Each structure stands twice: as C-alpha cells, then as structure tokens.
Length: 180
Image (tube, rainbow, N blue to C red; front, side, top):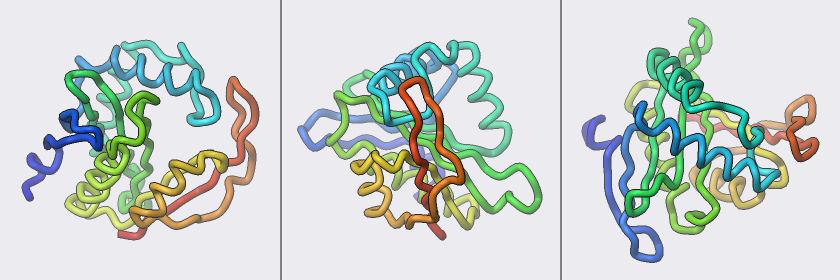
C-alpha cells in the first residue's frame, strides 16, 4: 500500500455508516478544537480542559508537528469529524527512531471501530517511515482505551513518576509501548 493510500481510506463503521480517514489540514482546526473540548469535558480521558486551545493555536501546532515529520490524521463519519490521531517523532538524533502517539474519538462515535482504524493506520505509517517504537500515555482508569492498545500490540511500560493534574483532578498515567 502506498503512503498516500495508507493515509486516505474509507469504510463502514460497525453500525454501517461511512467513515473517511484522511490527513488533517488547517481547515480542520476548529472542528479539532470542538472534538478536544468535548472529550475533555467528559473528564478522566485526556489531559486537557475545555477551552484550553484556540483554533489558531491548533493550526500552528499542526504545522509544527508536520514540519517535524509527524503524522496527523482525522476520521470523519458522514462528514462530521469523529476522531483524531497524531504521532510526534523524536526530534533529537537519539530519539528520531521513536514516535509519541495521542488519539481521541468523540463519545458519540466510540464503539464503531474508529479508534482501531486510527491506531492501525498509525502503526502502518510508523513502520513505513522507519520508526522502531511507538509510545503513549493513558490514564490508568481508561480501561476501554487500554484494552484497544493492548489488542493492537502495545504493552505496559510502567506508570509515570507523577500523577497528571487536570481540570477534573489527578490521574495516574500508564505508559505503553509498541516495538515495531
């Protein structure tokens, strides 16, 4: 599969709706902020608070991520942005073989296979660009996400040395890794 085909695909969700997976672009900044704010408002899932970033900040962050050789992909369901995944490549000589992954899927789109599509795409992309390891941090109470990460091959790499403090309290961070 070509890199272009890898980053753009379509298919059915578990309930039969159509999804489109594609690279994120500047035009997605406002929808990405709305997605992040919605997931952050649920509490206990991501280390962010609603209203934490503006669309301009999101657009600049996307440019920096891509300029550093990273990946940013979104998944839409029937034209609505439903999920986002990014991989930040290590920027130093001794970390360029690693990628740090972050993923979110909107509440109304969970359980439809979109997280798995995003994760599998990130893994395939990481292999295609020569990364050796993917890592991520997940709140230890987010059992649904942890189950998905384990199913696609991630293993626990320990707990973070400190708790993560968010707008809704403190959370233990579980570190997970995938050797490619």
